[in-house]
Length: 167
Length: 420
Image (cartoon, rainbow over all chains, first blue to last red; front, side, top):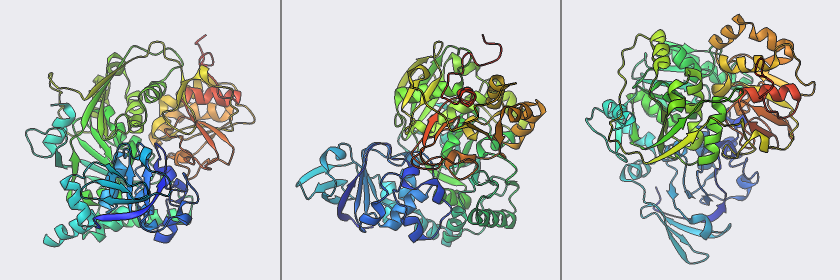
């Protein structure tokens, strides 16, 4: 896991649900590039084309609400999103992201202090977001030790591989 | 401690747990639906060889049942092979129904248990006093290997509902109203206990509707103290021993809300958010292309019965389609035995086989751009039931039926037999 991530911000509103992040009609797709092509299509059909690897998705309250589909995280991972920052995340989405090694930070007030296209530098350990465009710093919530351990191992899969290898 | 905390503590082998603590808890039953072939891939990827307990894991084919595409047929095929190879005791193929209906019917849900499924609406099982919660594929794969999952002990909020409903108003209207008042994120990472005189008297089906939609408020799990109707239902379905955990009198809730439902009107969640709720008399005229009764929220016998009471001996509007999908084969058979299927088909309804149907936009009645759907299901997000340019209104099954009859979004009060 990279400790510091720098990327361009893409801004979205409240209650962006997993049907908008990854529409249900594509759920049977499995190839990474196919899944990535529909990333955030329900909220912004041009997102997958205009974003670059390492870019930052900034959203309002309750990002990832709705269906438990892990595709919502898989599509963001395969599209190359560097980190997610939101006012709050829905619970199942939050777990799925941690499990698949996609960093995310809860940062109340973030949507008022970042504009589309701003360059952000995110320190995952400290939960600190620096807006390099405006030179403003925004303190987000630190990840719990338990969650940080999973992320540092690259998600829950590498952790479990160690466990099953020991049996 | 709260009953929910006692369930977690027992499953984690601890005397006590406290809010915010992370515990590893043993899962009593795990269920995987057919969107989640990935669980099998992740299971092997993480070094899994045999599932932790072949009696406690099952697959339910509901989202794509029967398979509408070659790709989903392939997903079913691989999941069937895994179930056979692993010797899973229980398997629910395309002839079963929606997982949240099938699980309790088959006796896999009881008070005090932990039930985890790859579906956000697993909160439904709070209706039975169980701890039900949804997870994604990777979490499920870790359960398939270890039989355990990590949980953060949640804050618990209390929603007290008192009173009794007027004719034509249903449990769906109650939960839509609460959602509209409290918002789609009031319970993110929290648990909700529903209580009050309204809840104490509720039938099993209505309890399931309310707990089902708790996840639309972000809840990790929902809980209702099991009443005699629930205990009778559970005992008729399983021989599994259980004790009902009780909340300590001195337990402090993180927040409490009070609702009186005596005067509640039928409710509507307008496109495109579940919290965008208004009473039906506050909605402008809306022409309806499709009306849907079904899914884990609105496909039970009671829901189909509500439609029969409105449509008996009548014809739906010729410009409106009415799709009805029973939540399970058992529901289908019961509705048939009571003559409901015949009456509704004669009224112009289209029936499909048990499963999730168009609720998640996969098949069996998806929407074209510009179309309007009124539905007894649970989500009206953009693109949820087909085109992102379609509009979905969430209502009760009675309101769906009244709307199919008139071809416009319509108040069911006054349409039901014997009411006026």
